[in-house]
Image (tube, rainbow, N blue to C red):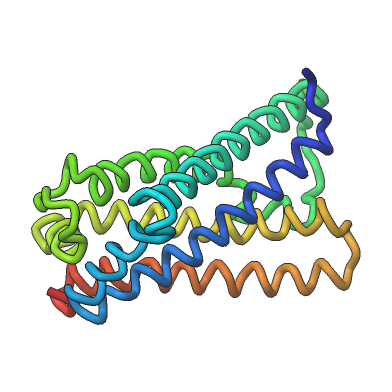
Length: 223
């Protein structure tokens, strides 16, 4: 079944909102690391116990994972559909084209490659801090230890990759929020200004929040 371009844009907007809300919650959870090992480990354990005893252990956590995975797949699929249709609609590149407001921003120009870097980072992040495949700490309940060992000074390259990925995530979110509101609310000037401000605030908060823990570990402020 062929999905309309409007449908693809709405899908991107809705799934993007779901993912941004998850990132905000995830960032807030990460900040428990500043409370020490006991606080972070209890927080992580509490996530697995949500719904008990009415629901099995980790059941709601798995529901969340499935929803996030479906959102990521739908988000990427919609992006691919829209990109392909844009190329078909304009197969010949113009020698010169006046810049369009918002389109020429750094975030807009790097959305595609930023998406690739983000996808690679998500895979690494899962292998590092979820399955512990590439993390020195193999004991799943020891979340604090995994964070401290994962971003240890000798693993500076992991922190560097994390920083680059989070920067791209923030740029992606800034542009994504702007695009989502344009899709849902329309291109009104009032909404445009408000959206740009909100987008920057959310992007900066997530940037600082996500980088606070790994940089603090790498530079010895958290150990």
